[in-house]
Image 1 (cartoon, helix red, strand yellow):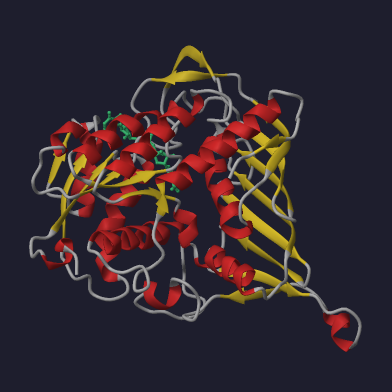
Image 2: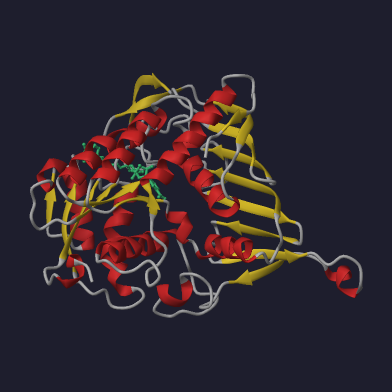
Length: 403
Ligand SMILES: NC(=O)c1ccc[n+]([C@@H]2O[C@H](COP(=O)([O-])OP(=O)(O)OC[C@H]3O[C@@H](n4cnc5c(N)ncnc54)[C@H](O)[C@@H]3O)[C@@H](O)[C@H]2O)c1
């Protein structure tokens, strides 16, 4: 049994960044002790840190955190803080994460691990030398439907994957008056591809294993400049804007193809896809059938099992499976665990926080929910993004990706 498990003192939690995803983390730590079995150690909601104090106060008050900080460095020496979520702009992750790990805090960092491969590599090195737990928030791995699709693949029920189609279509940047924000600054590949596409890349490899090469990559920046905001912005929120504009330097849309071992894949990530507020969807076509998961219905999958010839062939087709308690996360994740209960994206943050706490308190992997993604897996996404950027910069040339 680990020291963490035997200690009586509650595990103190803090969240850095009280924006769109920061609020989801703040809510998740609160609910993480209400899923599965009782956690062997109580959790105390200690602090929310954000440079925007009113926002920090709002989130801390709403989710029951004891105090707010306007400088995240105040958490480094805080003896009552053990676990910290880092939920700020990607380019800030490295400095904050490195300092937290050096101070002995367990860190759950939001995706993508960093804005650049260089930063991500340094963060992997910091995590390897540090004692505390360092993990990354690929929340969709916790979506019951995506986890179920992975089980279909690993069980071999549908046979080998022949091809995979994945897209993450979002519409938050359709409006040219949507204000300039951190998401629109950075190198090509750090836009739609790094933001929503990082989830897509991770989900694709979660299902189909490592990509060997990418090719045919293209980027488009559709809205070339954006007005500066007159007040602080949160997430994709609209605020009053100035006449002054700033150029958008990264991708609004990215498309590419990929080769896996055997399987082929086509992918698209967009933040200018009208009508798609949050459209992550993956379809696997396999030798003995096919399956689809769409984030809009996280606890539902479409499954088709191929019947060739005979009476059954006349009624071939996709059927909808509403996941129930025998499926990942539903049985243990909900107080009322039945097929057809509502499941949403916020639940993934709760399940992720729970898995993280289980690792911190020293629960064995066999008893725990699957561990959160490692920093090395976050670096892997940056490798894939780098390959897509290289392909796009060279007329779509095929670019190998080392494993
Ligand atoms: N897993 C998911 O589904 C998901 C969804 C959205 C965002 N994210 C990730 O979460 C992170 C944050 O994204 P967001 O949409 O919440 O951003 P956001 O812009 O809504 O919020 C960022 C917050 O950070 C604060 N901030 C800026 N500098 C700071 C500093 N030095 N110290 C403390 N706070 C500071 C800002 O005031 C703001 O409130 C990003 O890495 C993003 O990719 C993940």
